Length: 116
Image 1 (cartoon, rainbow, N blue to C red):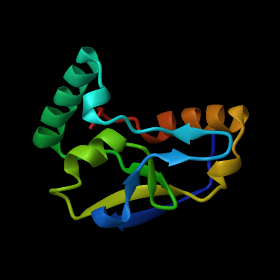
Image 2 (image 1 turned 180 degrees about the horizontal axis):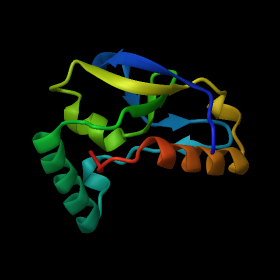
Image 3 (image 1 turned 30 degrees about the vertical axis):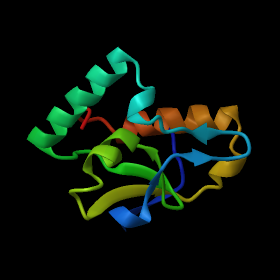
Image 4 (image 1 turned 90 degrees about the vertical axis):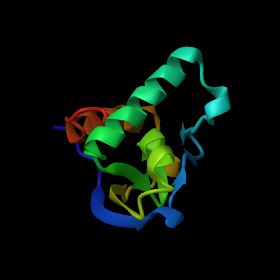
């Protein structure tokens, strides 16, 4: 089982921002205009899923920056006041490739539900 140090936390939408840039890693958010046609179709499908089911999995954040769930946050930030999050407490800014792999494996374990 993979583990990343984290706490459960609730953030107000206004206190979150999408993306994070560290020294050795980044979690980048692409604006709607930068999406490919297939990316746009996936975004629209996610929008429909969120409208039907709501957000099932928590956002994964670090110091108020959304690492995982940027699309869900982008879609819901104007209509949802608060977001349940798993706040990574490790120093993400200093992560190496090995840490990113550990994080990717951990987030797969955490988010086992549908893509909402």
